[in-house]
Amino acid sequence: MKLLPHVLALALMGYSNSSLSAATVSYPETNPAVTMELPKGWTVARQAGDVLIITPDVKNALIMVRRAEVMKDERGVKAELLATAEEAKRMFSLHDVQVGGAPEEKEIGELKSLWNMCTAKDDKEQPAHLQVIIMAPREHEFFVITVLYNDEHQLETIADRTAILMSLKPVAGSK
Image (cartoon, rainbow, N blue to C red; front, side):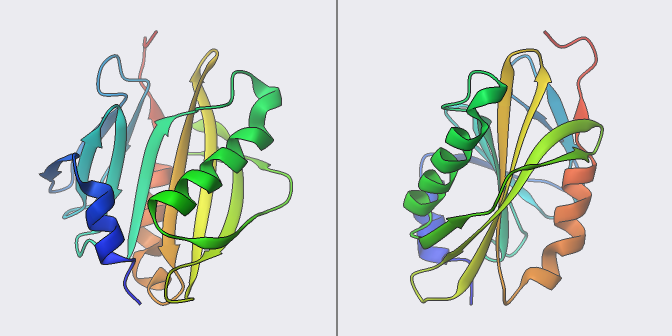
């Protein structure tokens, strides 16, 4: 199974693309709060403040970084998880999206975060996985990282996905 290439193409409409060879991505683009290191060949697409980070073959995995839409403080975690699952469902034609249990506190790179796993099925009934990570690198400013990958190709991208997440760093002096 490919990661819904036709749906991914639709999702990328309106995003500005840049192919990178082992580069650093800042988020947000203006007044960045975090940086991530990308492996060679991964592509970055930006639109309306969101960032999509895509595998070199544009089919097996992607990472989306955006501002939290619902969450205004720590009490809004569950609502943000549900909103993220709904957004992924719509954006990538997923169904049977199941949000995991209570989010776990984890350190991702140099940032503390809340982490949750969701499962879903694509339009061909193939299993897909969503890792939803919520972090606040600056006080009262919440970001959501969604990692989407499929069963068939998960082992091909696990090292790169892990490296990107573990490279997360807060930007010194960001306000």
